[in-house]
View 1 (cartoon, one colour):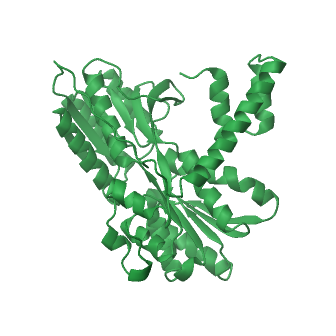
View 2 (cartoon, one colour; view 1 turned 60 degrees about the horizontal axis):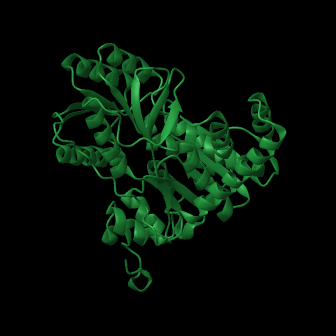
Length: 397
């Protein structure tokens, strides 16, 4: 676990506290005046580096966008039986998570059974309780509701079954053994940074996902960290921020449509928690030809990757989903074989315990780095991405 002063810097850089609160907390930790000066300088440097890093993520680079996650199986390891409950199959990404996790499990020689909860917390609870009765070696849970999932983790722990939180951190339970997730607040930061750079003034709409997930809450908080100074200065107005149950694109479209009507088409940017809402925004703005409205989201849906290539969409955040699945499969294998996970780079306090885990890299995909993204991930295809783009304007990937 990080030292208290390092945690303080992390919170300050993430925008979880302002300078006054930072200084107050530092003083409360008993840090001397001279040490405090050094801490302030370090925090300021880290904050500047974070902003610079966010800008670099949207441009081509000689470095790989995604790391190669190696799997390790030790002599004498047993075959591990894993139960994995996904929140849905409605969104494209979960089909990839399942495939990547299955591939990693096969590579390690383990077994996995999948269920998906159709974005229904009660259905997920029933499925996980059924998994517990079957006594797998490990349960991996991508929770529909991060707080309700805490009860499930506690039940699994009582049955002596380790539970791993996947993609969302499970809250308020000491029964969580390990987690893997992106830094959603950071994603919110670099998304908003790009939006502000492109549209420094005007009316902004924030289409958030289901409020039951820390993804929606943290990403939205990340947007506001960056937007707040511009709102205070009167340059930007957030005319709507709405959580949309079950990540329903129809609800997001209604939200955006209502604001577009209310403000007579005077919308500068739409910040979307995922690309389902971006595609809804394209419907509202009749394709958004030429990118009149800045639209940014998450997950790089093929249709929205095409919109970005055409210049109608602006950006989409991508998390190393294959890496996420491989980290989780390795952790399940390690824990079931009685050892600490091979990959752990962070600690998260879920309200009941400090839980070790792995934070996964995220980056912005734009027209500028689309080729590199295609070449490194094969998440989308060149042909589909550049459909409709004149041959003379297509890059050679």
